[in-house]
Image 1: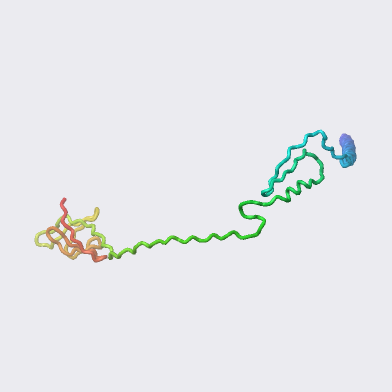
Image 2: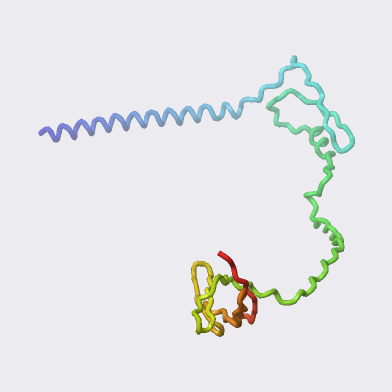
Length: 199
């Protein structure tokens, strides 16, 4: 039976709230109806006759100066023809392009380029010299009765070679003398004499 009692209190609360909402809505509508005609029918307050006249305002229109008397601020909606006349006499006098006129901007004339004399052509000096042979001749390795053999080094590598042999897959030993050796670079046909180095 308590379920029915709860529903009954909910129905009563909803009825009271609905009646309150209707009363508030009617009161709001009546306040709108009563205030609308009175605000439309109320005349605008006239400016006080005792207010001091405002100082005249100077407005520059082109090269002429037009003096317009500024009045005290009012809510009078009537048109002020003297203000309209002053704004009609105003002319655009800017120093730049007229934004109200369709015209293309002037195209600047190209400046004549300065005459630049080309640098003299480089003189051909011939083919570049071949790279030097980077072998060092530092001693003999021949025994009596055998062909002459020499020690050559390139960096950390040491080679033992005789006349006509190829060293480091690139250098051919042409002639061995007491103080030097003649070597040919077989890749670019470069011949050089390498002296015997001490120590």
